[in-house]
Each structure stands twice: as C-alpha cells, then as structure tokens.
Amino acid sequence: MTHKTTKEEVQEILSDGGKSESAKIETLESMRESRRAEMRAATESPMVADDDVGDDLKIIDRALADLHAGTVSIEDNGAATL
Image 1: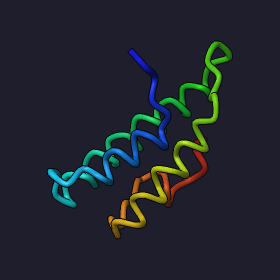
Image 2: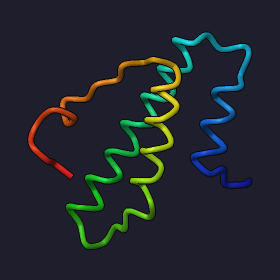
Image 3: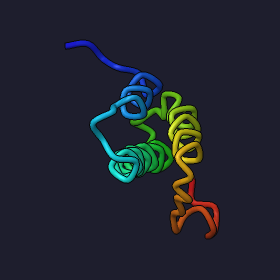
C-alpha cells in the first residue's frame, strides 16, 4: 500500500468527475477536521510531532477556497487554540 501525500489526495478529490462539488467539499472538510485534530494532539502531547500538518491544512484550505466552500470552524474565530 502506498502512502499518498495530502496534496495527492486533494488533487484526486478535485479531479473526481463522479463527485459533485458538495461531495468534494464534504470530503475536504472532513480531511481538514482530521488534520486539525492531529495538530491539536501534537500541541498537547510531547509524544506526537505535527509533521507538517500545518502545510497539509494550507493545501486543504486552498482547495476549499477554490471550491468557494466558505468553510468556517469554531476555532477560526475564537481564541488561539493551536
């Protein structure tokens, strides 16, 4: 089994002609929440490294912006949590 980078995963989602735009947005938002959880875990535990999760989030956020998703998380407007 090969490991895909976030960039490859996002490109695959965006180029999937069988998925509607709303399905692509839903998949990307799910990925975003997963990466944010990884980032929170990395900041709360000395045992976990963030391993460029911030870069992954930028890729996902850029794809969501390209789809005009208007994704908003409670963490985006609240106090700094990461």
